[in-house]
Length: 134
Image (tube, rainbow, N blue to C red):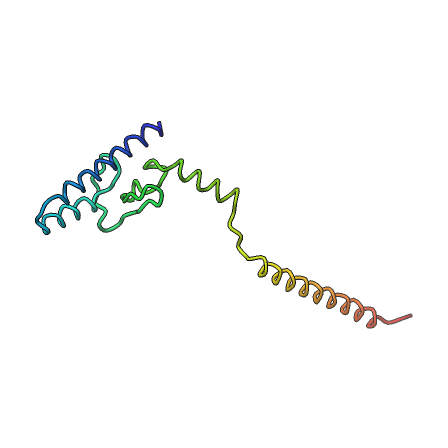
């Protein structure tokens, strides 16, 4: 089912590009601008005529512009691309800290743990001194 959706989506994108080329072939600048504006303000999803001039979602995978009901990549046919991207991020995550920053953070953590350990020892010794001997 997703394969047929993807093929229809790809043909719709090609038709939009063809319409864009036809719109820009005119010599009248005003006419070209109006045609391009109307083409850009319509959802890219097949057979959807919703306007996208106020609220639109741009897909980072297929570079299409969709209305809010077709904005999710899984709905408009980019589900496989999302799955590949998420798998790549899971298998090869970007390091959050550089090696030097990681070492600095580890050193700071070790110092804090030592300080807390010394404070615990001193509190235990303080409690022993305070007890009355019989």
